[in-house]
Amino acid sequence: MRIEVEHHSRYRFTEPQARVVQLLRMFPDDTVNQTVVAWRIDVDCDARLRESRDGYGNLTRMLYAEGPLETIGITISGEVLLSETPRRLDGADEPLPPAFYLRTTPLSAADAAMTVFAQEVAGDASDDVRAARIAEALHGRFAIERRRGDGVLPAAEAFAGDRASPRDLAQVLVGCLRAIGLPARYVSGYSLGGCARRERPAPHGWAEVFLEGQGWQMLDPTVGGTPGLDYVRVAAALDSAGAAPISGTRIGHGDEELDVDVAVGLLGRET
Image (tube, rainbow, N blue to C red; front, side, top):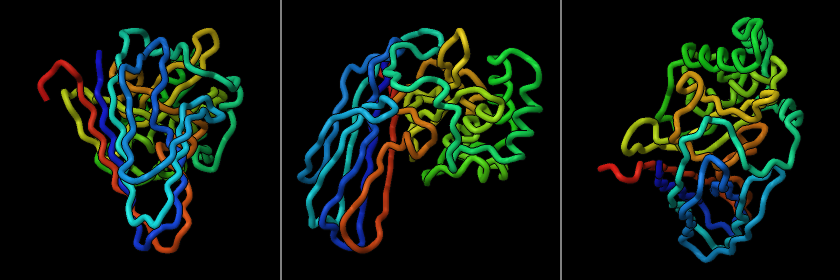
């Protein structure tokens, strides 16, 4: 399966900025499951880019742009070939041991209600079954807000509601899995979602859980469990902030506004 991705991000500032520095986590890596055929970044102003990896092993670029800047646009486009293999992650850069992903963060921490929910739903079974039960239960618990393009809610706040974005649900699942003692992490990337072409206001989010003897396994509460084959994995971290496509700082007064558009297509079909 060959997937094409276009990801447009534009910042607008109410006052000109003297300098903008951004960390971009928008670059998929080759694994056993996926091969990056082509991938490029275009910035609509003079900018310097420095390639690196963060502490989680994600491919990154540091972007440096000198002002005065009233707006800056970043476009990512590329193609990824996905293999028809089980949804186990193999061949990814893994600088950290699985036990690291038992750590909680303010964004992903499970509160008492989440912990009770996870324990009751998981029950007494093997770890893979327990993890799958939680993903399925979250899928049934929430109405999915697929078109919501703002940020990801803290897990406990999202769990208290009855509607959630796919990225909210992924973060809730990560917190629930850790609450029952399973290493888990938040993953950002792209998914076709069963359509020849789908436009989204934001990238997709899902979770990975580490199971002894099985390694890292994908789970997506948006679909109720094991994802399909059309997932392009980009970045993974303890929570959504650590895997966010763009984060950074700026020197200048005023406010900023971010517009994001993502389109994912399956090559070889009419769109």
